[in-house]
Image (tube, rainbow, N blue to C red; front, side):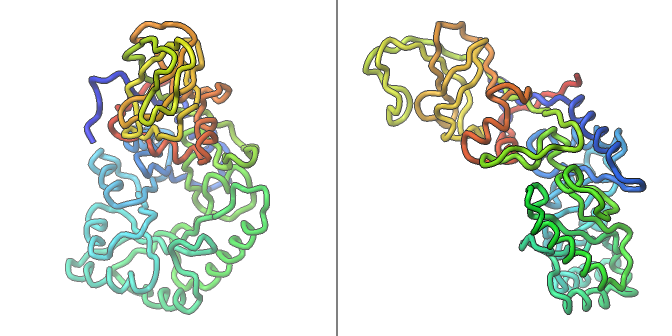
Length: 376
């Protein structure tokens, strides 16, 4: 998607906040524990390369991404530290990962056997992390027999370097620890079956690191915390208290591009879901669902100048309209999402309004919105 440089709409990212969040986590790590910075999905909408460079400066041991293309983007940006692809990559692309020194996740024994064929043809060695399904139900080994067989397959196998073994928690961000403890026990059991020796064994994610202690994990995969957001945030319960300070980094801004007065009986937007009951001042903002600002935000209040104004009418593909208490000039700043957690249009408030989590809100803001970076 083409970035809209000639449109007054932008996502601003405070790299100073990113840096402080990483520093806070680095100071929180257990002795000898290292941090992998998770920069998948374009750094959760913040910019993968820019965030990775800050994380590298602050001592991250490496990076996690979701797909191979994201890893290659980092390599093209001259980032040389270890990169782990957390998702399943087709075995046919194993040689590409090997040549670019990218580690891949092993989801099962069949994958290993298939990848070996492609690696052997080119006499390559691939770094791998053994994925364990300890209760997420997503990818990874969950049966003893298959995991034991995979270990045997890897013994003295020169096509693979066993860099890690890991699992992912489904509920480390919950105050009910029952299932979290179940997953810990499952992972511990699978670890007891190892006959090969991974360099790193890791299970900590952001939530596990900042809400729990005493978990044996060589690495912390620090994701949403990098961006200053609490991983426990959801519309149905209050956030858990983080062990470290988190500072939101993302600010979503635009401007008024048109201001007018409509009259009683006039509608706004597709379907005329807002009908004026009297003379009403309407402002237009050049952002819509094609940018990731979805239609469900109808009614949400954004800050126009110094006033919080409700979105009226259905959000269009490229524009939305607000009802204003007074006439304001074209060019007046509109803060759609604030990076101040006390503001009523902060990213958690935006997520709560559409019954989702802030991860989704940030990731939906797509590349048509240019990213501007500053350090404060």
